[in-house]
Image (cartoon, rainbow, N blue to C red; front, side, top):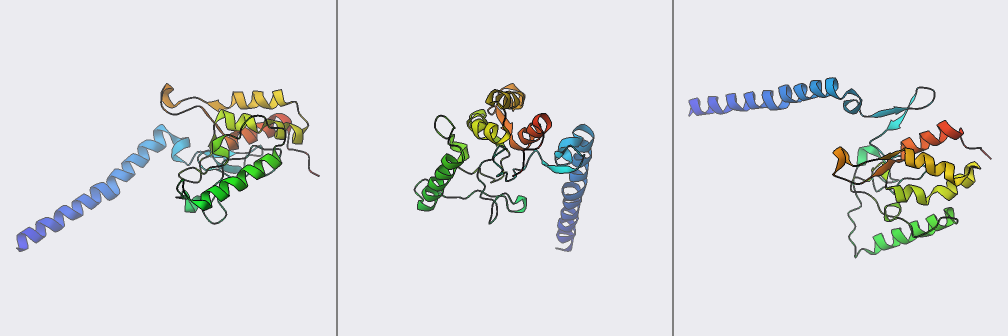
Length: 197
């Protein structure tokens, strides 16, 4: 029995050291060498060189001169990186229907000049609650509001979106998308910060 117990403890310690320490350190080291930007959190700097966010985590933009992300169910007020989660509300949920109805009303009020139906991702949360991307349709739909708030021709905003559309991963999986933080930084880079009342 002692021999079996010693063997079991030895295998457990060996497995813990290999899989809990050595393997994570090896993978972290390889990632830091091959993909330092991604391994470091994909942090994005603003015009003055200060960190303004991560490409991987959505932020709440409410200024009419910026692109707005999808709604978030992460945390009490949303967009909480420490509380990543979806709402887990199903299609028959009254709470979900009420929330979507409120979002539709808010979007219509904020975007009176927008054409066509509201893209679905602007009224629904993602599985993580922190998806930083919009479909091209979700970005294009917001252009009239942003152009009006910035006093810029809509075609100029459309070009910014077109320049920032990311293609499919490796050419085939996923869908084209635009990162909201990068779009908003591009707006400030090309047109300056929006005028303040």
